[in-house]
Length: 298
Image 1 (tube, rainbow, N blue to C red):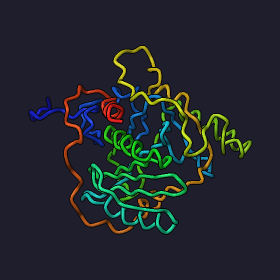
Image 2 (tube, one colour; image 1 turned 135 degrees about the horizontal axis):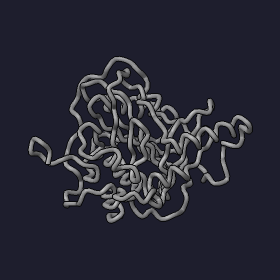
Image 3 (tube, helix red, strand yellow; image 1 turned 90 degrees about the vertical axis):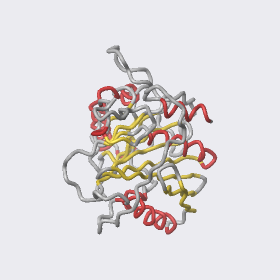
Image 4 (cartoon, helix red, strand yellow; image 1 turned 30 degrees about the vertical axis):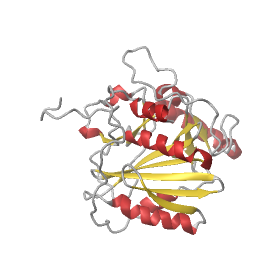
């Protein structure tokens, strides 16, 4: 129990996205279940892969969880103290996608408005949540026939994501810094050297599935938190990072980056999306509980 008598907030309760400062769970407990990217700790999906996308300048641009039904990315941005930035971004993002020819709609999700865009048989879903001086955005992209399952999995990932805002000042809408885990940073450095030597090498390595064509392997749920010192859990975050793939600049432009990063006047305050979790059945704290619910309901 928390000191004020209320229930402790712990990862595994599907009550996120969590603010690290409000959590009873320590980051060290998430070593084998979450990919620690500095500003965000993202739960990996067992049976999936971790991939890093490099920019034309040979710098890490995006980190994806690649699953059999699509890929998911989670990014945190600085926000003003007053909530409501996502509502402003939704309008800009939907307009940008429509201007580029995508079939676009705005749907009501668990946390509020979600932007859905479809183009060439691929569906992209943008989910945003306002937090204390941060906004976290989840993007799920995959074949349209998997859109419903991918939407549920994206929400499950977001419900177990942790945001590490830090105390440094950042202008609203600036992306919070991404810090790659050491093993992944070493792979990126090696990939940079290879790309400088052979620019074509990073565009489509042999072991990287084509975009929007995830590997056809079963997803068995998220990996539980390791409770001993036996090393990386097979299929866990450390294991997935150790086998991550680094590839070149993607042809798909992430419209949300342009919309969120457009620093202008702070949007007016609006109500922050709230509401009870969709599944109220009691679950023991486990880093995989959200993903396990998803799998049971498929």
